[in-house]
Image 1 (cartoon, rainbow, N blue to C red):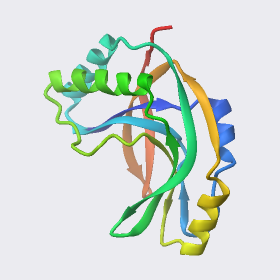
Image 2: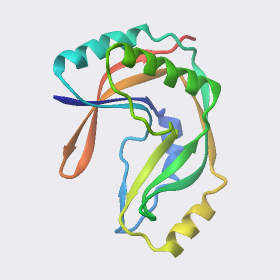
Image 3: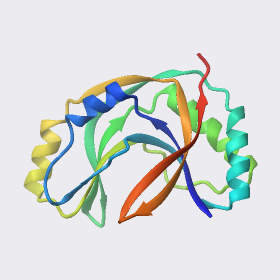
Length: 176
């Protein structure tokens, strides 16, 4: 079994800009591979993984400009656990998300039911103080950047020493 997801990889120049947002502290676990997850697929058999790899070749979506704006936090039971940079859900991103969804559904892959909230995970948080979190989000509230999304990728994910390690299985070019 292999754990899969599709995502937009972040170009190097945008990664450098995102590096300015990297928080410090012993309650922070930094995300080492910034990306915008399009669809979490989950654990699949090697045969289905191969079918997915092939089927994604048929995606036909134009390249687009992706806006990144501000920072925020996801909470669970009112506790902050993920720090993120926001991604504008523009026409191009939504078209790509939808095309991949249709492709996966045709293969019988069950998609997540939660609302698509495009973001770039910056760090996992382990009980940060409210003062630190408020100061951080205020300091970076006006962050903005962008990049041209020219491709997306299928990734495999595995846990190594309590960290997620991602491996690119295949990249797919968007139409220019």
